[in-house]
View 1 (tube, helix red, strand yellow):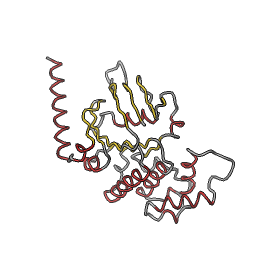
View 2: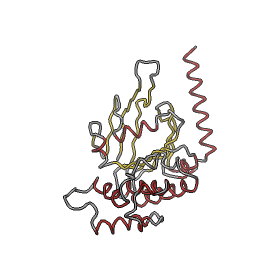
View 3: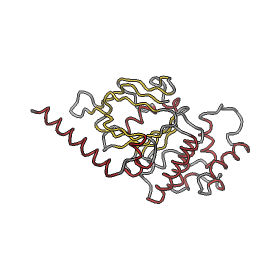
View 4: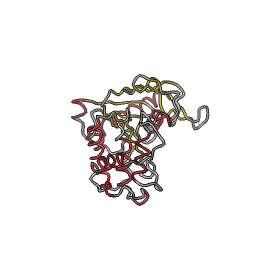
Amino acid sequence: MLQLNQIYKVFNEGSVDEKIALNSLNLSLNEGDFVTVIGSNGAGKSTLLNVIAGRITPDDGDVLIKEKSMIDVQEYKRSRYIGRVFQDPMAGTSPTLTIEENLAIAYSRVHKRTLKPGVTSKRRLYFKEQLEMLGLGLENRLSAKVGLLSGGERQALSLLMATFTKPDILLLDEHTAALDPSRAELITNLTKKLVEKGNLTTLMITHNMQQAVDLGNRLIMMDSGNIVFQAEGKQKEGLTVSSLLEEFSKIKSDSSLSDKALLI
């Protein structure tokens, strides 16, 4: 479903601030895979998602979705294949438009556009049915401006907008990090529900180790632009926060020793 081949990206090349963000990275996701991605700041996690989405062009390598190269496909055209939810609840919706107008825009990404109104009675009924799954009562507020919603409500709406059109790839960029604990738990549970319901191929960045352990069927750990640890199946099921922290400490320790060896 998703394949990244030898993705290499460097920022500020040739300067004192040179930073290799992705170091000839390879990654493949099968249909229905739900992969959680962890790693310290600067590990390359967000760059990875931006390369997949088309926001950043890699210096080398290729991105394929359903065996089709996306490397020359612009970001707005990739939105037909990709759904994305950002960390900032304000980023995924338009505050000046109503709930149903926001949903209509998301709907039009994968459906043929016509000169008919964006919100028809048939679509309004469909939007209500989809909103009911959130359990927030938003189905009764279709004409409300999105700017009046709380952060948790907006993020729930963003998540629905990214998933109800069943994208080939769903990208979640720390989408619960800006929420209070109760709303973060709500969005986490909704994520699990919507991903499983749609059998969506998903890549989710998180700094929440418990979330990384609990969600998905695969986990990858990144460091310095590389995938340094992977777990899936029974191994993933057996992971705990403590075992992940131990693995990360071991990797950082080995990396430090390698760096010292280069100086000898």
